[in-house]
Amino acid sequence: MAKEDFYKLLNVNKNASDAEIKKSYRRLAMKYHPDRNTDNSDAAEKKFKVVKEAYEILSDQKKRSAYDQFGHAGVDPSMGGQGGAEGFGDVFSDVFGDIFGGGGGGRQRSNVQRGSDLRYNLDLTLEEAVAGTDTKIRVPVLSTCSECHGSGAKKGSSAVSCSTCHGQGQVRMQQGFFSVQQACPTCHGSGKQIKDPCRKCHGQGRIQENKTLSVKIPAGVDTGDRIRLANEGEAGERGGPSGDLYVQIQVKEHAIFIREEANLYCEVPISFPTACIGGEIEVPTLDGKVKLKIPAETQTGKLFRLRGKGVKPVRGGAVGDLLCRVQIETPVKLTKEQNELIKQLSKSLTGGGKQHSPQEYSWTDGVKSFFDKLTG
Image (tube, rainbow, N blue to C red; front, top):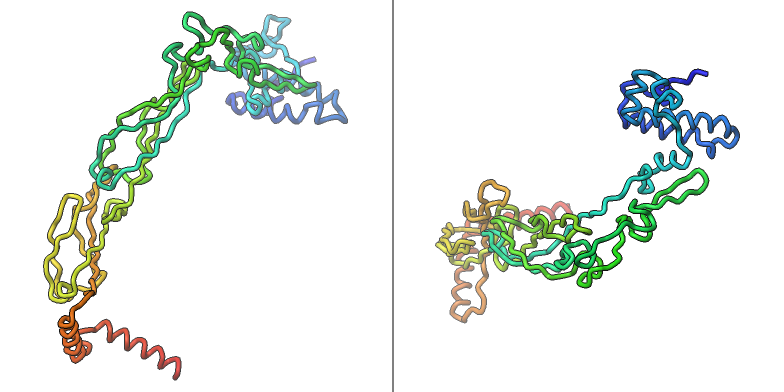
């Protein structure tokens, strides 16, 4: 009896990719598995086997090439081909291998694993963050054992193939049609056993130690930025590559300045006379003191911008500005004479009306209009 075309069996065309073939096969394997067709298991089993055979041929590049060139004759074992279907256990190992961590039989897990990445929180002052600095940090880390160089075996000896999984790193458990692969309980997936462990690391290949590292902090970093130190994380298992260390930046609160991206903000108190008649005051910057001219009749809350006195961003761009918000300070602890002078000034200003206090009178008029509407 002539066999059905494998491409038709899997519902794919001849140019189908490996991924398309595998996807179609999985769908059909689930559809025709006898456990899901109890009312007609014999017919489902036959269909299941031919679908499996089609997949075995088309998923192998050499077999697929022979099939494309010679048809079923190119892969028929009785004619020197390479066909042949496997049991249901292997089928479900293929279908569910990705889910249960297994794959096709005979594949050994890698004996080497990359070390974990680590994080170190570094607190900086605003000055350090803006200008950049060099600092040293002390990090607890798992490092490669200097005695066995990460092998875990005593000097002069070496690990041997695991007696349980025979070096495969996995063992297979089969129940009925299902075959599930899992990590070997003896070697934990490494495929190796250490008969004579290193005395320094007790067979772990790594030891806990504190490592001192130099870190160069670039100018302009801010809270949330991080610096990657390649290969300074935990050492890999069984001689694997080390992970990375990420230095997480946290900038401390400053007594004077508040940073917002590239700009700095500060509040500057000024005296009542300076606000009235103007003057010149000194304000701090991260580079030192500078003079700031205060014009006459300055109101509290007015913002003065000092260009280029902010921060140069770490990722490039223009230097930010320093913005100074003035706060008029009310005089305190006045003497009797000073109190009399303030009263005379107040009397003189009150006589001027809106001319001297336009905001006060504007606000008072607004309040009066509001209550008139409520009572009107």
